[in-house]
Length: 213
Image (cartoon, rainbow, N blue to C red; front, side):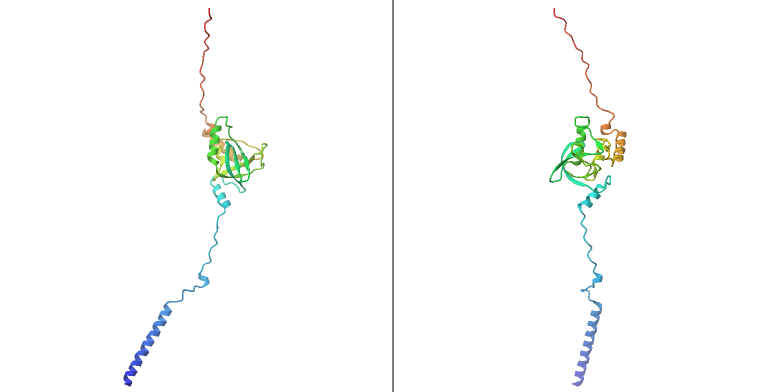
């Protein structure tokens, strides 16, 4: 009887020892990972939302890299090749492009210049860059116009829809306009086309009827 009891106790002790060793082994192989320290959790990066000014200034650098400091307007009407009507939601203004001069509507290429101006700015939000003078003698705002990254004053000269004309003291971009005009002349584009259609005036002869007897 004592032999059987001793054998039973030895087996129980052996089982208990094996169980404890297994528990220790499991604990050692599975460190606590549910509570990471603050040093292992990166702090969230601040969210940077680009402002309209930063987006606009970036897009405007696509062509001519203009300086900062614009006034935004919405174009509501096209008057001719170098004049538009704009609105700032509270009031309408007439804007005359400076540094350039497009033909009048009753002059050669005047309609074409107006239509190109329409293509560039109609219905768009434009940015006006001021020079020295704010308005002309007619009360029109004076400025350099940018629309969707295009420097409109310069584009009209580059494509031959306007002349480069200096209006001191507003001469900030005269050098650019003069260079673009020279290139437009070199390739005979727009108003600089050397071949213009000519009108043929028929040579009519007046016939005098014979005198009546």
